Image 1 (cartoon, chains in turn red, orange):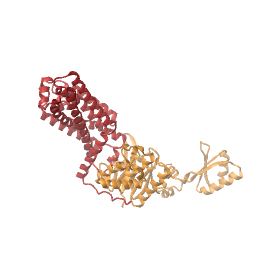
Image 2 (cartoon, helix red, strand yellow):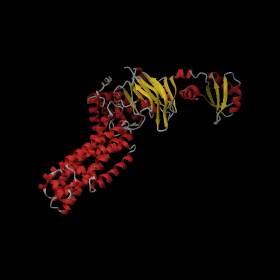
Image 3 (cartoon, chains in turn orange, red):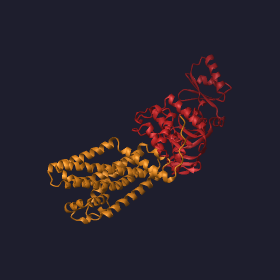
Image 4 (cartoon, helix red, strand yellow):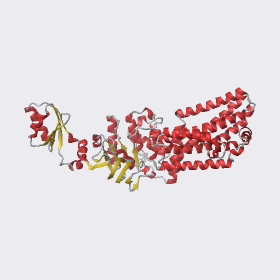
Length: 275
Length: 307
């Protein structure tokens, strides 16, 4: 067999675009296989079953309300941070720890491209997982409540939630990737990440006053409430004092800015890190 | 194909207060160069400095006059096979190489062709479509070599590439490394198993405790140490009696007893000493269990250089 000619040098822009795309692809492959895939499917099954039991068992007159409570609050407040934490650790810290990332670091590809690709992979996985979760929730609502008429508006809500989840996923993934890169060992990153998810995003996000506005969770929630049906319901039932929830435009700006800052912080660490 | 020039310019690397390498200066050009030293000598540190995975604490590491640190563009010039075991177990060997080759700007088809060519070079074509998780240790070693050379780099840096290989795999890799050197590529091969390196090259860089001990051709390094005699080690029951007899022989420079009971004779003419030993054993009925000239391999060269 004749050996192929060596590949030509890449210009920096092409190397960045190509590296980002390939890193993203590899990240997706890494996440959508093995135990991670099964853990994700398991979580979706549990949440959908929970919805079915609650809606069917309580014979609630408005299944959409329960759907919002379960998917909007349980999923966005609790599952989103932990889902992104697991994916971020797997995509950065885990690969670095087991040594397979080294094969990419010696390619003609800037490190920033590898990092951005992995953050986007984490965001994509989060968006896909939430979309699957919310869409399957629609089925639970329709079937368990025996009210197929509610399925269509709930489907629209589902996609709204998935979009919010993807934006929130970007912010959380950027943050947890930065944490994963700053902590040398994955277990330390896991402890720091879990602490952050429980304390800052859990307790602080629900405190009265303005401090909660600096949490990702409350800004994700603000985007969630932007939907007229959810917002009206939330105002009535959950947040009498709607001042607690920042305006959606502010929340979107906050989340995108936070994502940029976290990626920059992660990049600062990753660019200078020795392997 | 012209090889790349790898330059270490008074390079030191510290891990906190721990010394990695200290004031290493050498230039490595086309052909095969062995990087030799015992475990913990600093070989992997030097290699990681060369491929830009570590930043030198002092000095410079250059490939073709360009710094290796934070210089992704050098990925096109350099192929690196790590000494670590890590490989993506769930992928096939072919898919693994294909994915890596696409980072070099190759399309799917070109990447597949290049992957197949590399796998054939390391005699893994038959198992190209098998999951890496099912590969033996020797196959994994050769796969690491394949990913290093698949994009046809001008500089290949191989960290302990013969570890875990069976004799056939070893032959394949040794022949391949020699051939790459003959093509004019620059190949750096690290090892602590010294005779392995001898089978691939005569040009060595000796390193110990992070310091460069010797640098050049094996024979040149040995010649530079000609004022140091060879050592002949003899395992014998009555070492003292034999020491007395051999000390009178004109080729003997000195004798010493080791804690193990072995007798060590220092000589500039080991062949003559061996003949004398045979005569003494026969005439004085001294039963000799084994005789070995310690200076016949790089181990001895290394020891001389250090001492």
